[in-house]
Image (tube, rainbow over all chains, first blue to last red; front, side):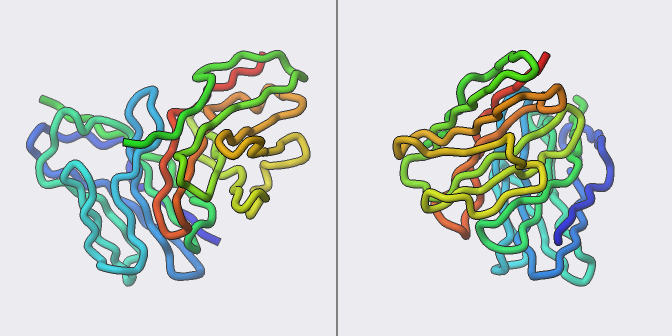
Length: 113
Length: 113
């Protein structure tokens, strides 16, 4: 079974500041890990994914995440926040390719001018 | 960029009525999914579909739910007798293979009254 915990349901940063959204996972098998973003009234857009290749994964819009097995973490970062980054971010885990995604609770990111 | 299209964007139905949610996955994709998100809660897996049959389903996906790919392009979710607790945003997703992140549609907001 897999599960995901996202620490912090709301994160607020200033424009230009570092964005750090935390995700810890639990999986009985080597995990596949994903970050999705949801803008208001829109679907879930894939930001990046980890599928057992490089542990540092680069995604769209300047985001990246690092898979740390020892910490069971997959935190999402962006060096400099932009106003357009304001959205809800979901971490998700899958136990095998093609199988169900288990989502975290989501983190609402607010970017202040 | 190819999209997963869901219709309608919002549907209101009376309790006990049947409802069909429609999705057009990306044309060369082979794996299809339905997820739902009850307001204020996590995104939850419902069902996955491959090679014209259900490959995995969750505990939520009981006998009231069914899926179909009737014509090679549409992928539908039917709820036979809706309950108030079926009110949620329903997301369709598709994937070209089992190693790829999904592409999600924008969702159908179902309101059962």
